[in-house]
Length: 430
Ligand code: GLY
Ligand code: MN
Ligand code: MN
Image 1 (cartoon, rainbow, N blue to C red):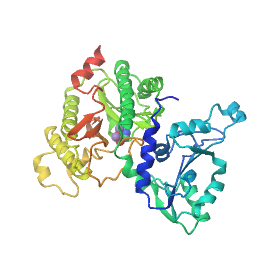
Image 2: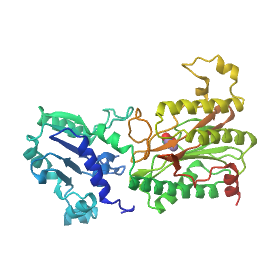
Image 3: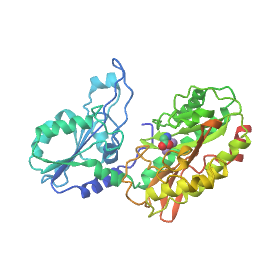
């Protein structure tokens, strides 16, 4: 295993909380993601379904979790189905989880081979009134273009059990997952700590003329060396004007003397993620204008992150952050108070230079699931990521930290990642 195992008590607690939210006499079925194929027999690797991981800790393909808290027989209340392993499979694929391993990780007593799933479900299904099934509820990505294993399970289940009631497991997990347990904060902190080491290595390596992907390689080296599962997402390493394309990630440009680089990167450690952005000068010395823009964004981050506190609604917070950025844009000479007084409130002028949201939950997903109508509360972990993008000057600047909301404010999980101008310059010139 690449990461410090998580205590099974977390998964037990998560299943208990999930069960409390279920209607009586229902069965929940959660399944793992597919291993995505590329061509022939090659694959893009495996990333576990996060709801399944949250409820079981199982990080292996072809897994199904069945929860039936009201089952009349105890042995039907929790069943974990895993891919069958034997000596032959071991020769080709190495160690897969045994039933004992899976039981230890999840603290689920009954573990079966996944090939017996349909047969066992059939024994139980007609005692239940309905099902909870997993589904991707992301507002943009939950399309039907790619049929997922979850989609196939929904289709299969509805065909086989057409008169049962059907419910959304994700409605429950979104609510639960947005408040992190201490064990989860520890995992996110570990991801953040690895990111910090990666960033410090980049600062020591960067030189004019290097390619952006060479800096990506410095990150990859540290991440792999420290036991990260993978980058949390394809990192953005954008020098000069490339930083103004928000999702730039081809990382194939040259880092030219005099430019500033924007690097947005994260670590996935034990399925938990960090997400940070830093900017730094290619030659180790910010120009006067780069300093002005950088300092403006840093002020927004410092002031804006203080708004992340219990009771605040995400939409209110975004509004306050927009005001902060607007004020800095005036200071930078990009907007005037007069322009702002005359602007169309439906189409505010600051959006020309700052066009994205500033906070998202982070956890098992980088843009973690959550109900954004719910006010912030202690235990939530959110990013804060203001930015100012000026394509006509070839400058794009965003700064991003990860914050744990506490009863009385925030803890910055990325506090040790250098951010002050003098610290960045000092580290680059040492
Ligand atoms: N890296 C994506 C984001 O910052 O949200
Ligand atoms: Mn980011
Ligand atoms: Mn982010």
